[in-house]
Length: 167
Image 1 (cartoon, rainbow, N blue to C red):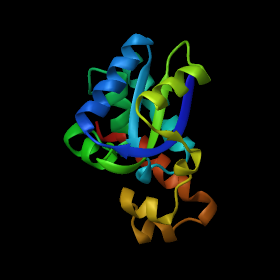
Image 2 (image 1 turned 120 degrees about the vertical axis):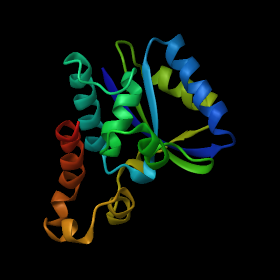
Image 3 (image 1 turned 90 degrees about the vertical axis):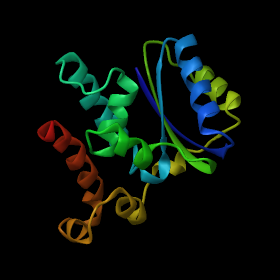
């Protein structure tokens, strides 16, 4: 089962934030991955990342040792954690955050519990993305001009698909 949500809040310490997520994921037997939502262009961006990451693990072509990190790599459109983490990782301070929850038993209550633990407010609007999101992600003006506005999300999906080719 896969759930994707957006949230807003203030991250005091990245290390503490990530440790809470890691502990929560282990307690609930889930994969939980957090992203800087300012670089996410819609839920399809993350759905495609999860699909590619799970397939890479099944086919044993994964680059990392965890599903969460593999999802992060695909979401970034790259194959190096040292680039993906600064690009797609959560930032300290006031933040828009996207979460991927992946596992057998994901409920609204489990998600609510994590958001409370992290002092975050659910806000799926942070997942919508904009032209600024695409530019921050690294989509060029030439790429934007090559498609109609309703196809902007496809530019991200293309970057995700290219990860398999650049392995």
